[in-house]
Image 1: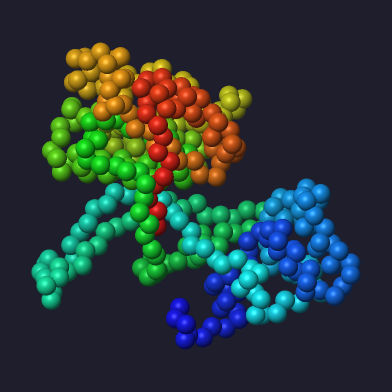
Image 2: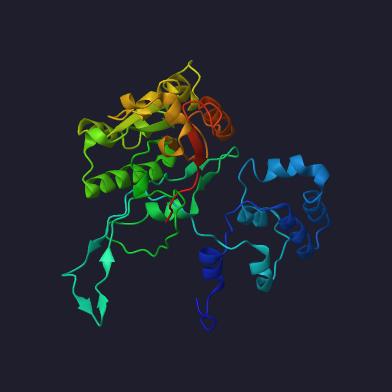
Amino acid sequence: MSSTSTITLRELLTDHLDIMSIPRRSFFAHLAHYTTDTFQKERLLEFTNPEYIDELYDYTTRPRRSILEVLQEFETVSVPWQKLCSLVPRMRGRLFSIASACKIEAIGTGEEVNGLEKPTSTDVDLLVAIVKYKTVIKRVRQGVCTRYIASLTPGQDIAVTLQKGGLHVTKNELDRPVVMIGPGTGVAPMRSLIYQRMQWRAELGQPVEDTVNDLLFFGCRNASADYFFHDEWAKLTQTGVPLQVFAAFSRDQVPFPPHLALPLLANSAAAPESLRAGPRAAAKSPCVRCAREQERARVYLRLVGQDAAGDSRGADRDVPEAWGGGEGGRGGVSGCDGEDGAV
């Protein structure tokens, strides 16, 4: 938006300021300046007192109460419109991991126009979970961006930006296996990695029998409802793609402990051998392979929100322990890369 363009107050609140975000403690301190009601002013200032941090959590974070709802409840507060931009946070862009390989296709005949090549295009796949739930106070909450995505129709144009990923994947590492850990929608960048390595193998003409096996560890609640790309993994393995998929389903394994770390624990001893599958496996000592950096597996870890059991902290703790402590752990597995490409 240029400095000379005009905008209405409604556009400012609906398209630029995040009035549906959860307010911070400083927000209540600012609101107290804009009310003359003694009772509501005292109540607002209570939320700024560190002694009432539990009350602030119960009022805001636990029920996911938004800035808009706070303003509706404190009806005596009158905020000048000139102060809105300093009081309400700016709506930030949402990032979604790209779930497809980077395959560029030329548009038209590939001729040059004014010394420049004609533009190219590529298809981008995204795996998006639509956020919609009820809070403890029985109010429906929807994600700002995913609600917009759900309203889109096929063929509709949208504006997006691209951000460089951090997986640091190169063709030079095709001889090294990768271990991918991505529960829920965190499997999106892993799908991108799988197809990118497939594309590179095809470009280099690398025979399937000369490739190492990659491992994908996936977790979700229900196999029938949340097992993303299940049919794709089965089709890839049937066509000879060197990929093994291990899945855990928290709601389907009761009373078996449902953490994503369980298949890791069950397979951590066997996984290094399957990682080294290939014609070179019998020719080299496992100890020598573990010691050589170029033969060690790359681990890509992506935890989104919650693990298969609904506890993100449990997943953060259990996955490294299940794999022998992460860096330098059992099986010669190198450190984790936790970043990925996003759109």
